[in-house]
Image 1 (cartoon, helix red, strand yellow):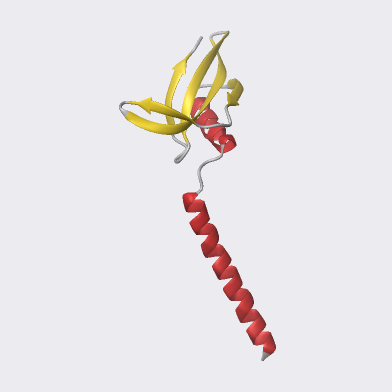
Image 2 (tube, one colour; image 1 turned 90 degrees about the horizontal axis):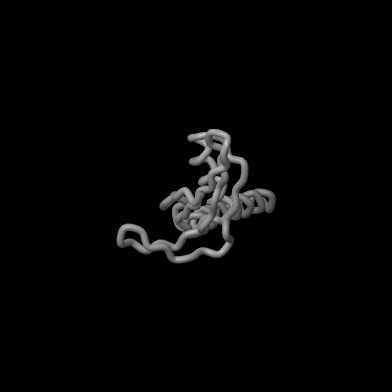
Length: 104
């Protein structure tokens, strides 16, 4: 009988833990590392990347009349034998690239 209760308690513990993790993940913001990875994947669709960076602290960005909390980062790509640098902003909440501009 006590073995049955132990298995039941373990099962309930796992279920509660799983549900708690789902709730936490739903409200957790994206990490700078994950934001950089997603931005690099988007840039790689147009060609190879030779370098990248991201600021770890989010900043407020206004785009098309909307205000976002976003990470600022950049990538370097070799286009026609020249290194071109691009800066981008990634939304902290969704991980979507808000904007990207070529700086050099």
